[in-house]
Image (cartoon, rainbow, N blue to C red):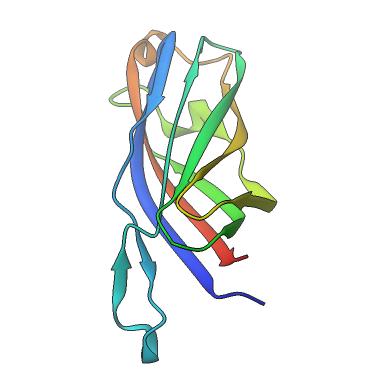
Length: 142
């Protein structure tokens, strides 16, 4: 079994016709004794989704970029959605998680697709709203 790698990062999803998730720096645990040190740039996640409107079901395609010199297998991705601003609660946006095995080559990239739904009850306050997203992911060395 390979080393376990972890990820925590934040991005933003715009509740408009063109939605994007920003890239953030990632730190993955190093192989040092005790795991107290962190190696920068383990793997990163970015992606985009378009055409959101109340009741819309879309796909958020996440690009996973592996900065390691060895292949990894992403085992899980979860997304915590924050409020889209005053009058647009987080509950208006649902992003499903991923559990499985998504291989990513050494110093390469791969895609993971997550279903996204904007509630049919999302009001006018959600037009153009920005929902902060916090990602948690785990991967193992292949």
